[in-house]
Image 1 (cartoon, helix red, strand yellow):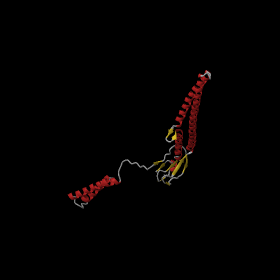
Image 2 (cartoon, helix red, strand yellow):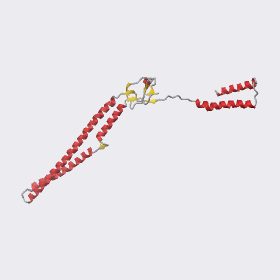
Image 3 (cartoon, one colour):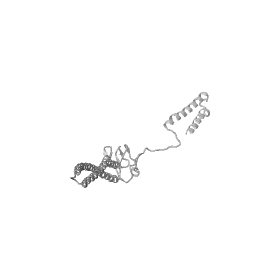
Image 4 (cartoon, one colour):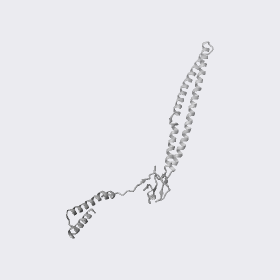
Length: 241
């Protein structure tokens, strides 16, 4: 394009100054014609080049907002139609929510089961404490009995065999007390397993339930911004222009 304009300009100068000799091609007109050409070239480079930039390679790309769901599956329902203008937050389509609805139901059942398990742990701890208290009282009673029989045996009022029986009974009770205390400690550790303000079993079940509820909500895909849907939205379905 620039070459054609240059040729036409030179041809115009030839007609005016040489063919028809309308003007004398002196130093003044040489500077004028050269100045006009340079000014035109600079105007094209500085002005037109900024307004209409030139490139040998060009890419035309539309602004696309990808609309990918959180998880794969079947599309249950489409709420919009092609060329429809939507606002931010408007529902576009919904993935099949049944799998995540089932997981949420399972998580709800697991949470109820976890609460029951924690209640059972508390009951086991109370039973272990009661068992320790019972054995401690039995040991105190046996100690009193052993002291009485020991005094009686020293005076010949009780047999040595009876004294040995009570002594063995006390040893068995002491061993039983150690086992009861171990069971109480184990129950205490189980009930003290906490995550934040909740027991670990309940916290885990609550986390699974929250994840299932989140994924269930994400089954409905919503518009991220106010836009007009493309004509092929239903065909390709997962993008906004």
